[in-house]
Image (cartoon, rainbow, N blue to C red; front, side, top):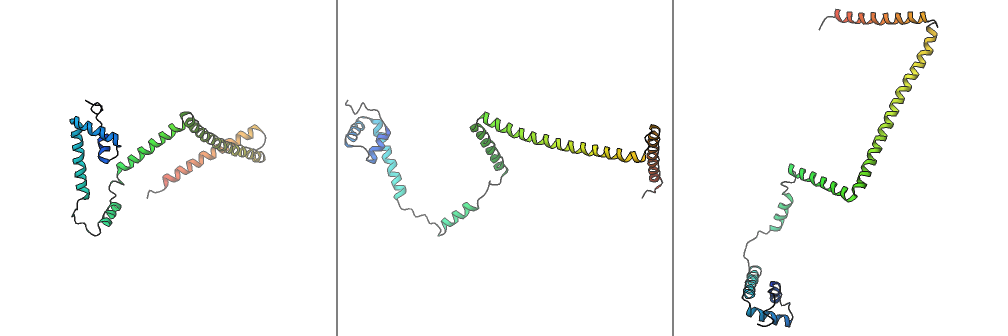
Length: 194
């Protein structure tokens, strides 16, 4: 056995042989190997049959009648066939894809960078909420403080400075509130039900 029979059987060499891509030396070595190797000889015959079948399929005349507007019909059908585009599964797939992309974006940014960004945004939101709460609290506090000052100034003109007079006015005010509530409840009882 010569050096050609000791070669490894490689089917890509047979394909290159059939395509005429081998140089003279490699071609002659492969031809000697094919004479001695039954496996490569069978592979060569199989690839030659395949090439003949492809030539017949592509180069042979095909008498399939096609309508004159075949390309236009196919293009129109392809544009109009939107089945599955608005299916619920499509929305879920899109949602999962967006979620996967978000996870990938956080992974690409790095855990430290992503957490710094998320914590920075959360800190800014918390700061804004605390500032808004402080503003509302100070507004309510200032309003009640102003009302207390105004009521003190007005009450000095109407109520004498003695404690007895203050208790007397407080008692009269309580009595007036009780009488008013009693009058209102009596009015609603006396009114006919419609």
